[in-house]
Length: 331
Ligand code: PMP
Image (cartoon, rainbow, N blue to C red; front, side, top):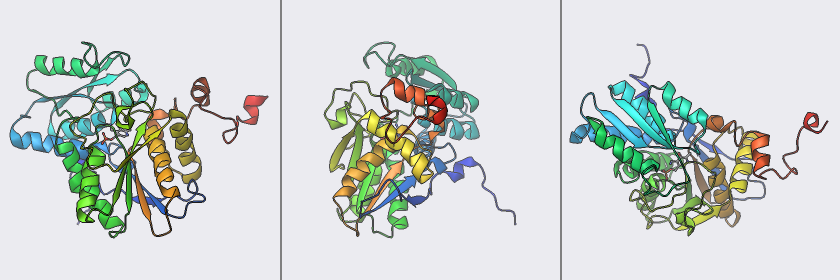
């Protein structure tokens, strides 16, 4: 019998856990990374795409030949685009202009239409990416907006997949779960499951860019993509989170580069942010503690930013201590 998957959809989830061995120097606890770029669309968001689309089909909100319209920073779009094309739906995505061209080109490659909106306007401005997507929903026949910010199937997908996977993979020994907060779906669903199954023993820690509302800011612009907000989405249940750790762009991006160089993990900026938070948590822990940090996506979408020395230097993110310019740059 030939072994194969019916389509890319059945490859979503069941991502590996990998120990961090080098950035953890001096830390006694075990720190494990849940590496979500192993999903077929390259990010954690494939999980919510499958769950949200299947629920909308079941409820009749998404009908054959329908169009999915969503404001997304890229990763949710990729997940939705893959599931949609396999099931015969069209996609229109609305992105803020801080999202890298690489990410936008990926969405277009999967056959989606992409509309780019300015980042520097209020959420209630007519050109904000939230409002543009609402207008597209009104004007497109057969349109359905998953709205990952309020869709209960976003956290539910993590309650049903990410949480149980982590509990099984650690054989119930996980003591801390750390994840970045964007829509809040990952931390809410995974955290809720882990708390329930462990009888409240697992501590749930959110990582947030400095300036975002989750760590007490106003939503001041920061450069890490996919995390932090300027409003409180209903997908996020703040009672699940025990603690929020705020991390600067500089710390996030420097750690992102170290993960590639020292752990073989080419991951995105929100992964570096989450690892900084995880290490701050792990510093005070002992050898029996197991900290799991979720790494949402791959670094491929950020090669011209975080992994580009000129871009990092323009923002003052390189110290020239650990990250020396090469000899050729100096000559
Ligand atoms: N990192 C990246 C790169 C993301 O795209 C997202 C999703 N917005 C997150 C982290 C945060 O995940 P969540 O929306 O589940 O809070």
